[in-house]
Image (cartoon, rainbow, N blue to C red; front, side):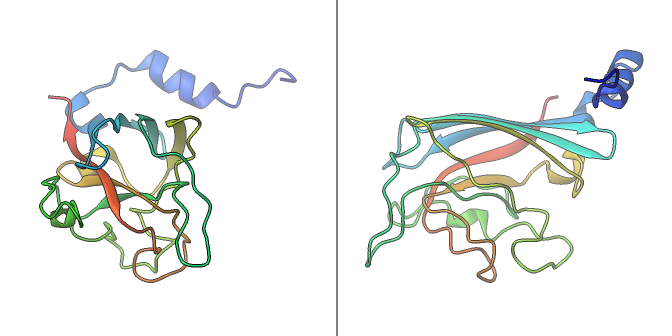
Length: 177
């Protein structure tokens, strides 16, 4: 628009240089739901770009939205975070994926402002596609950690983890090699 592309730097970077050492420039996580959400599947790509990382998410099988009541939290939009341990064992089906531990927070920032906090996932008939940029890490920094989808939205305030509720899906972050 108006003779300027906001992607000039991005396009120049990728046209002029193949992705050297893809093992550290790109990571991937395959998302799988817990026993109560067996059809919840997805993929997250982490691509190193100038100044940070592009994160692209594609998920299907998310539960239908249910508004909050006086006694229950809403179901969706869904909290979405990097967790500090690369473990997606379901374990206790009533409290799955606890082996992934808490949110990844390498700089000890308050919740809502740390590297493992991502935007919530909004579902349309169980499907979510989202992309965003972060300058908090590069893919090589997160290989071996987990991504978790929570049943409730993140409030970005409650400490230490945003009150996102039960973990319903998990994916191990791996390199592409």
